[in-house]
Length: 620
Image 1 (cartoon, one colour):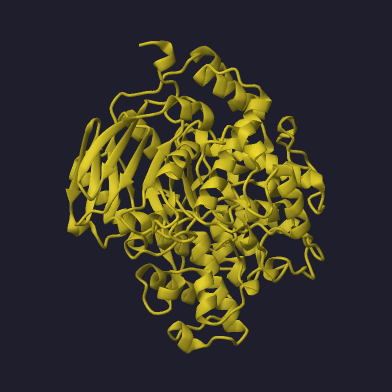
Image 2: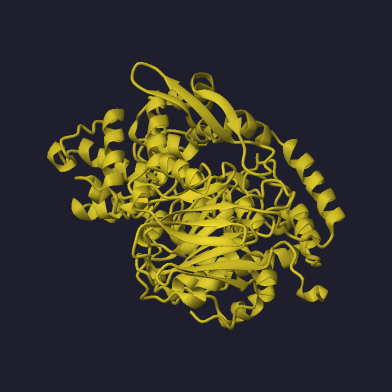
């Protein structure tokens, strides 16, 4: 094989499955797409922008779902076992991208596939088995109705491969909850309703057992040396040590100290019971052991036990920061055990914990303001802190029972049901805002406003990267530590550049908790592919991927006039470290359009920008 035709970083094969015709095919990865978009979300977006139209209903057989690994997956690179699931979202009707860890991605690559493209809809409930090159679509009505844990166990028994890896949905996906997620090997692809897309196709899950495929590396010695250097650099950071010790629960007190933690549905800046849901309390009362995803040296995952008079559970996955905030401080619930049970219920049903908890918290707010009553919520008492009612609402949501049928459509649907102004609902571009307060870091206003999938904190973690105390140095890609309460052009440029850099992470696919300096990431990409990228090339690569997702949304009919932040997220708080702070988001938005070289009327890049990024041929 000529070296120019040889694949590096990828196997070079995509599995395409049409559930309507019950056919399986293999297509080749496109070399030109690799260099321009890497893989992962970038490659998936380039594929989907060609094959999905504005009028494609997200829950129809015409919609396409892409499961895509990145070029680092299956290599020795640290924290590189992640993959993405992309489609058109049934929730936002925009770009859908869900990122997931665990071991499913590397196992898929070992089976000889870089990704799976799923089309059509099966007439019957089914699952897919992949054992090396043998791929089967198997009818199974009995697997329908089971939760995620039961499904995983059943599928592993069916294939008789204990070491196989399972990707599946729970009842949330079956019942087309708009923010249903997908579980893969105990980790979750959340936020954009990918579980509902699988459910709409009558596909319960995919089970894969790999063989001996592995990606080629152009310069293996340089690659190995770079991974060692990255590992040493990152593990010596204080943030890595904290993550190993506490996981993301460390963020509770850190966020509280900065005024970043939402309290009482975004209305307060302090809470006297905050220590009851802290990382120290979590570690002392619940923690059994840590666990890690593929090739991860940090191990932020937590296995916990619960054993008190109200709640009991044995060795379940512990809640992350976002879940603790959502089912804790958002509704003034200081019962950490009930938060862990809420997390377990969402995990079993396959529900995104951010959208679920935020929608439930909105009902708590309305109830306590006297704007809805018990009859509106199936007789439940939603006084602040009522953990029992919170758990009942999760169950109702998964099964679409009573008020759960409204919750399953999301916060905006709750607003419509009870005639509530959008200014009181914490959503941006339909999606519930994650639990980092833009009044604590103005860069998060831009992060949420311009995230391709709706409000998303991982699109650009400005709440960490822009603080002067942050130990990670991103200055080489013009992400500067700045005044986080400034409506300045520097804050705009730094947030924008961070979005571009994280777009590379979504395409490699790498974990945002593993943060070597950008030069190291550049060296790793060059060693893997044999490229000669400099840091400016890396910046352009990230901007190209980020902009491509913007083009997808414009093709789906996105109107830039809808870029709006509701008043509830802007009203200054009267207490806490972020008191009397609020971003001038309209000013920041204008700066952002100018910095990006986008047309503020159309929402799209100028022709000059498209040419610079090599996107001038994309139809949108």
